[in-house]
Figure 1 (tube, rainbow, N blue to C red):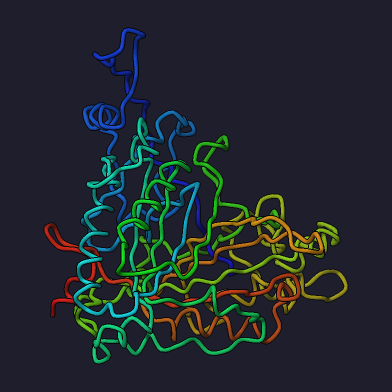
Figure 2 (cartoon, one colour):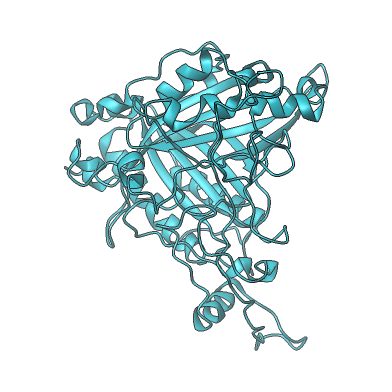
Length: 430
């Protein structure tokens, strides 16, 4: 975990007007397609790309929950949806391995099917084949689907020469307790939506479309606070109760694109406008954490629990005074505080765009919560983003004794597909 900001979409919206179903004598009813038609007529379609979590203008009042179904992210954009799209309430991460005998031809056909399905579902339309009706009556609900390629994909498809250097395996870290069966994979899919049924519908549709070409390697399910659940837009909290992500890079930053996205002239060419996703399942040792007083927890993080402000004073976004001392001459923000260690100016400018989900998968055999963070970090180059930050954390982060990295993956996520293209076409048909 790092000290960077993520938050809900604060774009204002209004609720779609009811549409009467002519086949029903009982009054107003909303089919999924009718809901979308109403939303389009009232101007509720919102683009997903280019809007960072928590950085749109705040409305005078919180977005009403009844409008959430009408919000739509676009599929054909410069950068794939689900990177700068505001945090969604529900998420699924799933990795696939190509089936035995499947290669480049089968992978291309799969990505073509997946892209078509993602475009349809993100528009609020049913899947083209055997739709399950799970999301019937719902709008798009800010659904996004994002696709990436793992290190092993390139050998499986005979495309080793196209494998980016930035996709080299991550180094080992001292906090790693990795389960290989829940790590890596040939293909990676990220699904997010503001409605759990819409998210599940997309998950099921993509699993079915994999057919005989690929099999599921692992799946992880996550959640965030629902947009509109607070009186005003706020940075998200994690399962430790901390305001989590105050210093996330913002698209308004001069160097945002340089840090997060591969340039159009970058190498390899098929990764133009793409990004690299580091995915980590980080278990929080909540029983141990919750034994600490709030004061002790704040000193582990370096920020106030109530509002996320630095211990040196001010508000959440106030710059941290790393040299400030107390009456006894001790640093107000301890040397090993998580927020101090992860500051970009303490790490040669290394920065990542965090877009996580929390998870809770029940309890282990000892009754300990299996809960924590599905950490997803976006960057133009992991060797200049995640790796130096995690190495620094490895050397003395106070938070390390309360977390455990249990699964890991690194994926190359190409730029968005142009109209008429599928994601990865420039790689698979080069």
